[in-house]
Amino acid sequence: MANLGGPIEPEPSPWAFADLRDPRAAAHGAGGLDDLVGMGADTAPGTLLAAYRHGIFPMPGESPRDPMMWFSPVKRGVLPLDGLRVSRSLRRSSREFEIRIDTSFDEVVASCADPRRPHGWIDKRIRRAYGDLHELGWAHSVEAWQSDRLVGGLYGVAIGGLFAGESMFHRVRDASKVALAALVSRLREAGSTDQRILDVQWRTDHLASLGVTEIARNDYLDHLEKALRLPLPEVFGGPPPETS
Image (tube, rainbow, N blue to C red; front, top):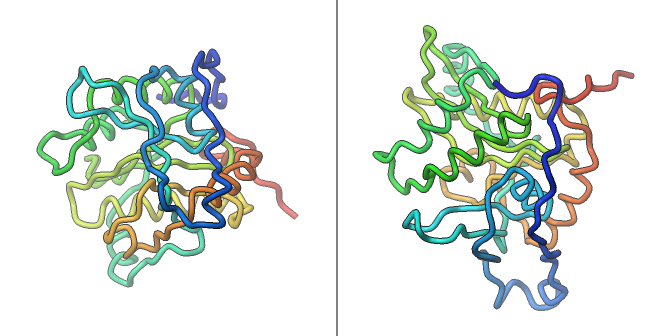
């Protein structure tokens, strides 16, 4: 279970992450820029947090021997907290699930890493790294349960006003969508909804159907700088939201 007293700052990373804002992008578009911005380094908690704070996230290579790859998409997929598309059928099906937070983090990550899933990328290094972040209170799972059985969910990293979604899964129809809707609701409860970021890395057709849009890397980094100054949502160990 995650640390209940709020996140614990780990030892700082020995690796340096550069500011990826590119002055050419504003004048000439994204031509010549690449989503892949680095290779190597480690996945210690301090390194992962430093990366997210710079708009960067890791993905492993095809082989365990390959160095870790680090990405900052030129076109970043984000879900505006007031832009989630909830269909009538999804509203109905949401009543069939119980939402829990951080009760089965390891099982959520293991389910997302199931090798039978197409385009699987979560290896043992990633599972171990995010498990360590979870123990320190930075990585969280949002879970959909039915009859005391985990049937869907997602996990990601929460830093201030940023929630960086990593992966989600479902064993029952709509379970992952219900978990996503629950996450959006929890983030909205924290206030400052127009300043918070729900980052999904890349926009896909499926995510676009739920309201995910794309923003340029420079814009994402500017938005991120402001989001990181916000308090962590209470559900992830932050203070209760202020009431007027």
